[in-house]
Image (cartoon, rainbow, N blue to C red; front, side, top):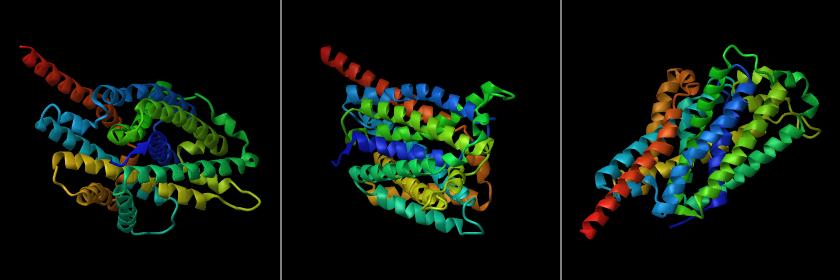
Length: 360
């Protein structure tokens, strides 16, 4: 079995979150300060979401939830496989739809949305068919490019900063509501932590270090990024589609007039990397349900069904309500916390019953 290193898995997870961060800030709260507080609170919650992966690693030798469920019963394995397949379908559906929807705000004029979906998903399918180490190395390269892009934009924007600091305030009609919505937003965006569970059997090392590194760096990255975008754009950051692109448009240097073209390159490839990892893990879930399923067919199905659903809603111009709907945070909590703990409890109960039978 090809393995993925701790740093590579960290890069896979952080690339996914970087794509969400570069895309948009939901306008369900009034100002950036609420969002920054919500990010801090959500990070503490996400520490608990990483606990099941650590338990499975230490107690069950690093099995993914579907294969672990098979230790209890075939029925539980199929149920877990179906559940996580639909979770990854939902994950891919949101990433694909958000990518195409927000691409509208960058490209002027009409473009064939279905063709864009097919192109991006076909590239992601190719990556999803690769070995875990290849996905990890690709993510590492893209994370480095994202960091370079961010440093260049920030370094080229200091002359443009001005009254943006006035946007850091808590003058809001309902502060608690705004912070709560920000927490939901970050929990939904952390579906990338599912990779911690499903790359677990292929991970070289402990998930403890990966999750600690990811949550720490993610917190710093989000807070600094939101803070600087706010300084640059003020309250406009909260209502701007692709605020990073808007900030890049204002950033200039002696060599480069605008950095929005660089934004597009990094943003597109981050979407492909994220989808490739999703398709790779989704195919594992399909094979848990149908053991004889071909790997290539499983990956293609993992791309085709969410893509078709996204295209249907995009062509009907109904995606905006989906993009800004944060209720999917319940899926994140359920898939990362409740279901793995429930599966672990079933397996432990079966082991205890077997031990009691042998003892009798």
